[in-house]
Image 1: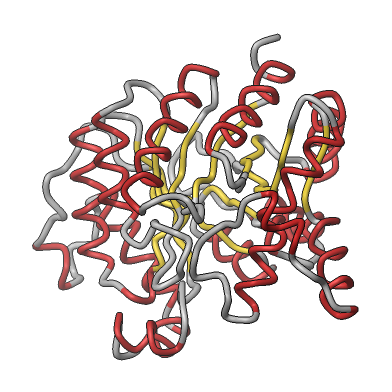
Image 2: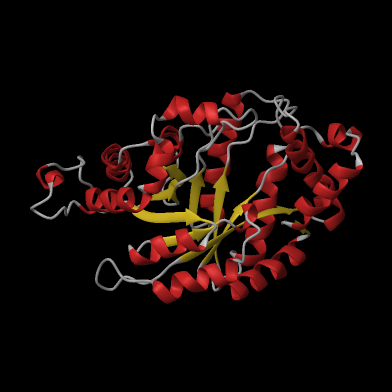
Length: 334
């Protein structure tokens, strides 16, 4: 089984943003040593508790301090940016770190309405133009605009020997079909979706049209996971992330991820108890054997080539340990 890491660069209540980003590097290095396939950084803006507003800068830091693990965005929020500039950024990364760069593409805003306005003037219009933005980005990455088009006269330099591998990230049939018709690998965000991922991925597989000769469909499913030596301990560790989500919903999560002790002291009202239970059901929580079995079942159910794990804990040590325990069960045995 191929496993990968999705990192939101979470900031705990006892950390600075610099410390959180340093922990992201430690996680990428640990993932490389443990045999994880890729490490992706999310893009979020003006969200207290997350340090991942500029993934391309973080990736430069990660790439310079790792050697083999693939690194990429999860995802570049394309409606905010011109495809040419995105191609320049990721071509530069691919030049610096040959045959290691993924460029994940998404259409979300990545923050509040005010953030959206601060980032771009025409976000909603660009969301509607997403199909053409994707096509332009692919042409820039492949350096193959048709001669009759305006952009055929320019290149997104530097041109790397191996182009960044494009992925489309999404949670809907619309995103799946857009990936399929453009011959792009597809990553389905199960951890942030209530949609029928099984049928969405099947739609992608059925409609996939290769962009290049020999290309085949590729599927990643992304899930939230917290693993510890015992299921009891994993449940305890999960409290920090779950309570933090509730705090953010009330505008109270600005201090970052609470400690387990702080999370235990948080008083849930009836409405929050219901939300808490629903959120917890969407996370794989357990000891290594429990997590292993659930991941194997997910891979078979979703027909996924790879599973990407997102883990948020108060303690950076608990987070790295979660990835280590899972790797020992599913990667080290290969």
